[in-house]
Length: 415
Length: 65
Image 1: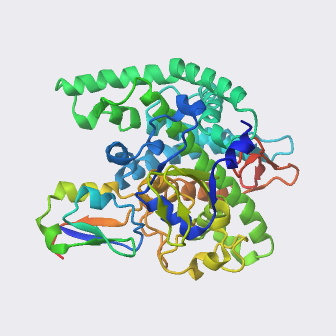
Image 2: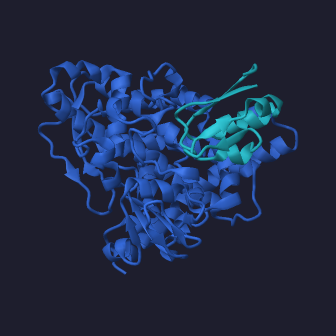
Image 3: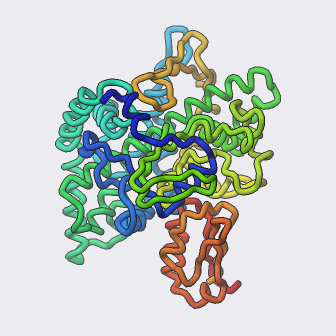
C-alpha cells in the first residue's frame, strides 16, 4: 500500500485536542503502530507495548531520566560535547564559521544518545560519521509508517543498516556490559561501578518474554528518538527566533536568557510536534466525551498539528510563534500542547528534552540541573552567535510526514 | 515522608500504580496524595514514584505533612 494511502486509510482521524487527550489517557485503547513491515524495528519496544509489560519496562527505564541522571549527563556529557562540536566547526574562506545545523545537531546528539543507551566507540569524527549514517538509515525503519516514499525500499536499507550496527557497535557494547553485569552478579563489582545506561539496565532486569533482538530494537529506537526531537526542535527554534527578533530588538538580548529560550522551545514544540501522529486501537466499544462513538477494534489516528494550533485553546493567533504565549494559557494547559503524547505513554524522555517542572506559570529555571538538553544547547549556540546563514538556503524534507528541515545552513558570528 | 504533587501533574498515573494507597487520580485527572498514607508508606516506594513520574510533578522529602 502506498504510504499516503496507509497514513489515512482504514483509520478514524482525530484532530480535536480534547478527543486526543482523552484517547491517550483512556484504558479502552492500546498502542497500534503495528504495521507488520516495521516489526523488525519496533516490535516490543517501549512505545509499542501496553499493560503490565509496559509498566515493568517504564519502571526499569525511567532510571535513565532521574534528576541525578540528567544532571550527570548535562555536566559530564552534554556540555563537553557542545564545546567540542563548536570548536570543530569549519571556518569558511571569508573567516566566518559556518555549518549545516541538522547534521551538526544530529552528530552532537548521537554522541549523547550513545552514552545514554550504552554504545561504545563513538568518539572520533570517523566513528561519529559511521554511527550517524547507520542510525540515520535504521530510523527509516523505525518511522516507516510516516514515510511518504516506497516502504519496501526503505525497509531493505534499514535492515541492512541494522545488521551493520549490530556487528560494529551494538554487539561489542552489549558483550562488554554483559561481562560487567556477570561480575556484579558474582559479587566482584559494586553496582555503583556499573555503567548507567540502557543496555546495562536491561541486562540487569531481564524479562523472559523478550526475544533475543529486543535489546537491539530498544537501543535503536532510543538512539533515534533521543536524537531527533532535540535536533529537529533546535532548528525550528533558531528559525523562529531569527524571524521573531528581526523586528523586536528588545528581545535580541533575551537570546542569552534560559527562561526566554525555554519559552521559545515550548512554543516550537507546540507548532512542530515530536511525532506527526500516533495511532491507537480501541480494545472495546466506547463513546468519547464529545459523543464520538468508537467501535471495538477501530484504529484511530491522532494528528497533533491541528490540535496544537486550536484557537480555542491557544488563542486566535495559535498558528503563529509567540514565546510569550505561555503567560496567556489557561491553567493546566501544557505550553507544548500534546506534542509529547499523554497518559501512560507520555514520552519517557521528555524531561531530557525540556528539563523538569519549569512550564508552570511563573516558574523560573531555579534548578540549573533540570534544563534538559534543549536550553543548554541553545544557550551555547547563541553565545557563539548562531544565526541563519544569509548565503545559504534552508530545505524542508519531504521523505516523511515529519515536520523538519533536511538542511539548515547557519553561521556563528562570535566564533 | 512529605509528598507533594505540583501542577505539573498530567495524570499519567504511574504513582497510582506504584502506591495506590498513597496516590489517587482526581476527577480532573490529576494525582492527589493521602498524607496519612504517605506517612506510613515505604520511603523506597515513594521515591520510586517520584523517580518514575515523567513530568517531575512528585516531590518526596523527609518530614511530615
